[in-house]
Amino acid sequence: MKEDCFNNDERLYLEMMQGNIERMASNSANCKTWLVTITAGFMAISCSFAELNWWLLLTLLPTAMFWYLDGFYLSLERGMRNRQRDFLNKQNTVGETSKQLLYNFKPLTKDKDDEENGFVKTTGQWKTKSVLPFYLTLIIVIIVITLILNWDCICDFLSSLFQNCRTQNS
Image 1: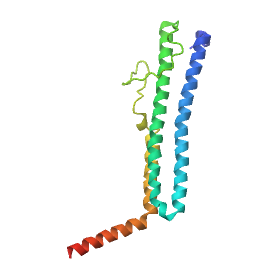
Image 2 (image 1 turned 90 degrees about the vertical axis):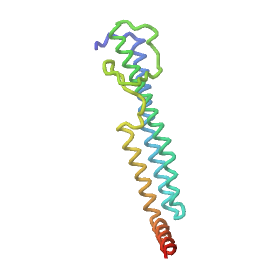
Image 3 (image 1 turned 60 degrees about the vertical axis):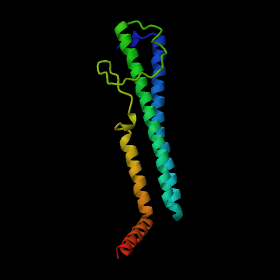
Image 4 (image 1 turned 180 degrees about the vertical axis):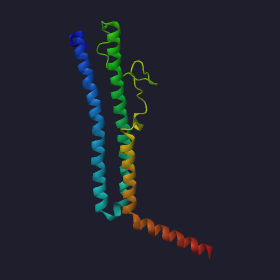
């Protein structure tokens, strides 16, 4: 595209849209950063106190919350990209953009992929390849560390359970 094909209003609109897209991407990255910090804090506290070993499972609550927020911000980012792409497609088709297209910042969501216009489905962003592996790995790590920290309690519980079963059978 030529440099001079946009007027000042259109350039300003595209710059503001790009700013919104960057902010949503930054919010998504911040969700991961905050969650790692919170999880590390929970792990440090639960490792330092023997009676708080099961407390680490409380970390699953903020994990679920940040997983949802991360997907929400990614869906907003995709919607903003779709809105920007819609503006560019209409500007290229019509040539002159109407004032209705300018400064419309509502995310454009599509239920199905529309390949010809370049729209991307925005629902279900919590299960994309940039989000799902991170949160599933973190959940697995939390559960494994909780099991390791409580291994003695688990073994004691299982041995007492088997002893009760033996006494009832004899």
